[in-house]
Image (cartoon, rainbow, N blue to C red; front, side, top):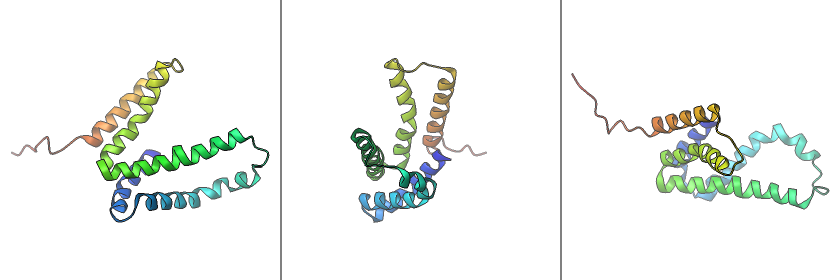
Length: 141
């Protein structure tokens, strides 16, 4: 469901970016997302005591929200304008594979059958999404 939703976002955002500024599209994306998510986490949000929370935790929360979420979506929208949604989608769907490879190189993860199968599925999905029908003409009788 997540992958399908994100693929739909990449396709729809390209049309929006033809009309609106990247920052405007990102702002509305997050505002709509906030409205959709808030009912599920509102109770936890209002019960959190931010005044007693350690500063490093607050810094980490702000970093995650601004840098690894908002900035990532902003750069993704910019990349869609520059190189297209199919190419951006390909890079995004390869991220888990690169993450697993880097963690194995750092000795923090092991190669398992499950990871190999996941990699095969990722490559199959990327292949299917980038496979060009133009490069293989139809055979007519």
